[in-house]
Length: 258
Ligand SMILES: [Zn+2]
Image (cartoon, rainbow, N blue to C red; front, side):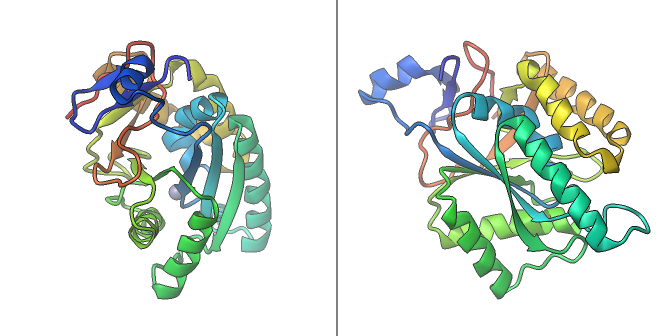
């Protein structure tokens, strides 16, 4: 975990691993951690936090992307089954590039549900991954599937007794995600290449249409964090398990806004 940085609950900012070990007298977290990244569609986790996923996977953590759907509606006029097969293959390839695996919750693109049955099913799936940390969509979003992914994750987090740290990410800021309030930044300057390759694995989505937008987002978030490129997160402070967040960051730590 060289270069890892942690954020203490008293919001004093980031500290180094050594600081924390001195504070607690021991390492404060398990290694490797189990980390899940929830995305409504193939390409959402990659665009929202692909750089962070690549860093966490490189640090040896077990990262699993949970795709709520297989992106059945992602090709205009396309046959949903054919599209789902194609996008499943692209998602698996993208996850491989980031160093993680992909699982699918098998809801339907454009028709996702947050009723009792689906909450139970999704909770069971997340529980099976024994996550220490879960990333998901920010709840305020113009796309109903993104909102539902956020809500399913929150409901699972409640049902599982806040047993994992919950962090939200943003996609297409201002167009899809809105009113985002980051409180943690991760320097992704070093993993941008892998993020780009993972996004471009989703060839049927014509990444040239949206990749440059996310580059601009990273640069803007980087400016806020004092690095070249950053991904921003909102970590829910009431998360029960982790008193500290094992986000990797540049040496010395990124600055968090409060
Ligand atoms: Zn999406």
